[in-house]
Length: 215
Image (cartoon, rainbow, N blue to C red; front, side):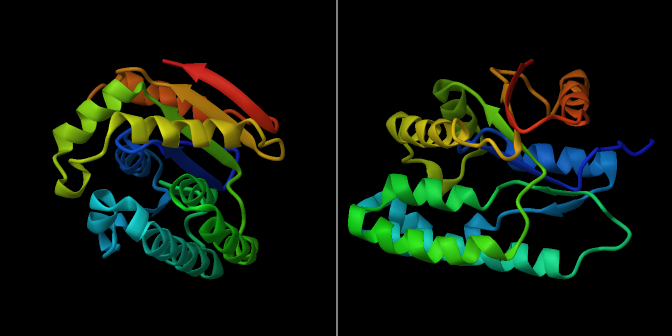
């Protein structure tokens, strides 16, 4: 199978919890031979407690995520693979700030934002951000289907808050190209035609700003 050709070097795939970010990354790696950066969220020891007591554990859970994402991205971009020039990640670092703003109180977020600003300057931004969007009811079904214990208490209201935080940020992104991909119930894991349509979308060279595409 020939490798796909992309007009950039660093693609970040984002979206709400349960939207299918990591699944799409794996399919892209199979198709293109790209290097993957995958978030190790299960390593966060505070996450199960956060879903039970969010106000108590929000700061340590977000601080752990930020430092681990920073370490992972810094290690990758300080030691690039000379034989693989295309990288796909299932998150972008600004996600750290969006979740923190939603989950922390005002004083905690002010401190967190200062730390984020320092760390965010140490590696490149994605050349293209692909935001996967599904309705919250679809996300809930997918979360329940994959059956992770730590996610069983996630509420539709929380997913709505996260979705709104993403959209508020995406409206302000003017320096880099962003694709908002309306997926609905489309299954890119099992439907090769859907997956190929996504591959066709991300192989276009987009100007900075937000571009909406639907499947």
